[in-house]
Length: 144
Image 1 (cartoon, rainbow, N blue to C red):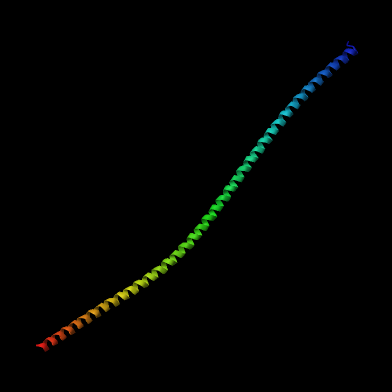
Image 2: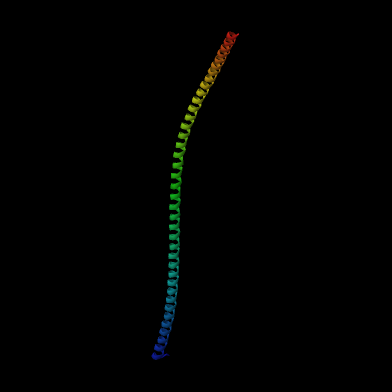
């Protein structure tokens, strides 16, 4: 039979073994927790980096959209100005065409008047020539 001392030694040895086993298990779990913590830190750093990149991309897109919006508004203003200028040019063209028509009518009337004046002048010249010829004949006849 075993003596009490042997039994206590055995129990002490078993407890020591259990203690060492628990210590090893605890150290392994501590190591696992540290690895998981490192992984979490890496994941958090990556997440923050991704957030930063996404934030920068969003800001860039917002700036691009703002610039595009400004360009569109400028284009709309230019189109409105062109539309107004085209309307003014059409009105100016209409006024010019009316003036040209009036001038053409006036010119046609003046041309007709000038032709009538020329005819009257020719008739007058012809009458004057006839009269002079008759006077010359009369003078000639008187001399004879």
